[in-house]
Length: 165
Image (cartoon, rainbow, N blue to C red; front, side):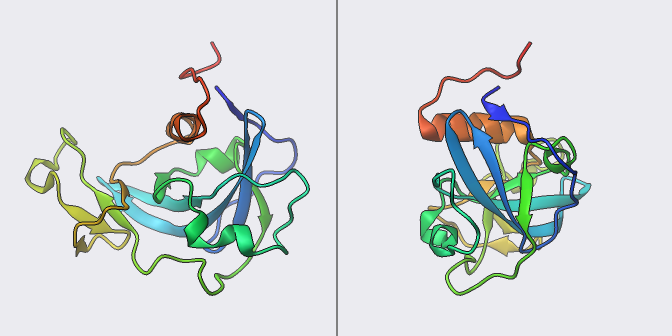
């Protein structure tokens, strides 16, 4: 796995939080968009933005990398495990500033998602409301630090393994 664990305290994510992760030699900033999305019956899924890599000395005081035009991937849905196991490290509790939040976060129902066949190919937002089609959308399925590892590794051109074993 390319995603590395951090040392230090565990934190519970909150909307607006600025966090980071380390994957390979890249430092990736992120934002917590929602902590209450329900995905295929799983409550409290977390919608996050994963942004383009920053330098190792970057601090959240520099808000430019947090703009949505710097998204590396479409919005992602993850579980709290990424924080409890310290793959994601909260840097600052914050609110969204201008240009830091998409007007609407869209997710597409993937094929063969159990119980969702009638919605296959449709788009929904983080509130569960059906949405217009979009060229920029995440996958409507609960993910983990593992799915983030794969998506970021692909986006950054890194070889990846599913696990370290």
